[in-house]
Length: 405
Image (cartoon, rainbow, N blue to C red; front, side, top):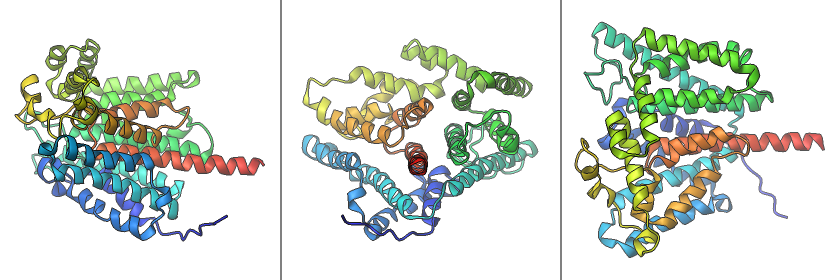
């Protein structure tokens, strides 16, 4: 039997990758809100893979996906081939491979991870507070991007836009709660642990309620689902009541928009959803449109209509979006690249995100992975964070099992 002796490294590169995925500072945003800081960090991935090179540990589903998104358009729809789009996808995939290698080789512990998650939530809170102070006093707004003067309190904090912060912060908070349960080997107690993390919870709730994004209320609800146990109901009601008081006091309309969008989405009627909230509808309606187009009875269904096919017609189907608009989450991948790359990525992302028994992870996976395209910072942040949770849980489970034996 061959035993691989692993030389452990310091966790600096892991921390760098996680931070680059979790934030999008305004100075680093390029065309199309692409995070140039993240792109620079992802550029290190091939070097990391070649340097540490344990190719037996590379995810086979991810490799098959990479091969498929290069080969299928090249052979089936060569006129649509756009290498910049393909290479961007490749960079994300290589970043996951490099991160996985570093995670197995570094001294990055659950305690390090817990501390980083906590600091990220606090960082979002502090930057949002600074931005809110700037709006209140009329000063130039710090780290501003994608700002609408008609909605002065809708602020992006450390993400590219408010709706991104509304997704990233609750994901990080949920991972913090999950990993803390793992480290202390006990369920997160709403009465005891919230008191210990009181400043973190204040930062989290303030960020979610006051950033001005309706999406924040949806993801806040998902995080609170973690605590739906009979003995915690009174504390959950108190927290929800506090949130309602804040919403009413500050006259926050985002909550009402979220509710209207949710009710409209249940109808699955595109026009009803757009009418309820146009901003939210551009994430939901393309998925409905593309889902209706799926057809596996022809070659295009299996191998794709070609890169950028969705952007050739989507603006005609949804009013108020610019020409060339694209979207539709993973259905866009299915329509443009075909069913095979689609199912390969679904299998890869779900297997590396989901942990048996934690059904809230499936909710996060649906909203942050399935509902997005492959080339999204939030998609890969979600996959990598949830994979890290799963990695540490696996290690702790083995230790407990060995200890019992």
